[in-house]
Image: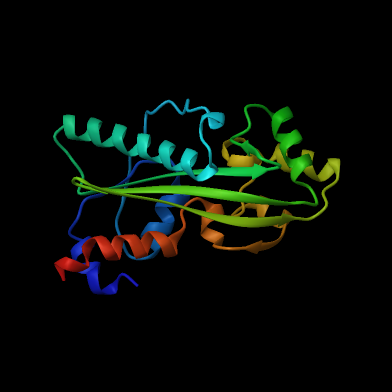
Length: 206
């Protein structure tokens, strides 16, 4: 999809406002070089103050992007493109962030067992003064899990830095019966929509 503008994008300094090597790998797999710059934004937005899950993840992603831009610009190394993302697992109208303890991870995974939940990833792309925001959502069906399976998974350590307490691209993927929507949304960066946005933002330079 990006081939017509790839020569333009390859000449840009692209920064991912994230500490996630998974997100960086997704972008690099399509042929772009990206630098990771974890945002120092304290993720303290209150979910209940937003009318939609999409608004919450987009606003969080925007704060990440703006913090990174301000910091890098102040250091004299302003990027050409900054990409930020925030992923949230939702079930029964509740948001599941990253578990703060093994006990919380156990509760999350127990609730997800045998049920379908929705994953939202909000993305912000900033180039100079232009900002594009979007959200993708994907439904994920978990199989039935027993206590031993959940505790065994928690023992791997994988759940502790993942929204909802699982990583679909890792061991957690073995719990997933099916996915309805963009798989990459669950990983943390919806590739199709991101590439569509990057193409539209740069096609005038062809």
